Image 1 (spheres, rainbow, N blue to C red):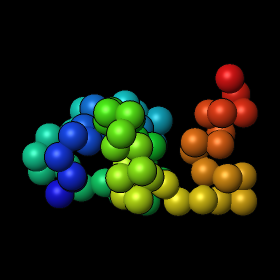
Image 2: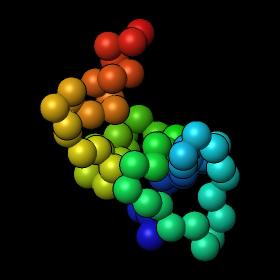
Image 3: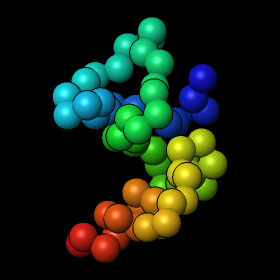
Image 4: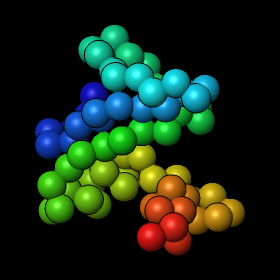
Length: 65
């Protein structure tokens, strides 16, 4: 269950871009696109952000742009 205000719009699994439905179960290594309001970023991070040696996806994006 996602907190109110978070929306997973799509995810990438094995090179395929998919749109989730109510039965979708995320798997390890899925990459997700999440929409949320600015004031909910901390809630989003608590649910999805897992730091890695490189710093996690948010650091990856920050370093690219």
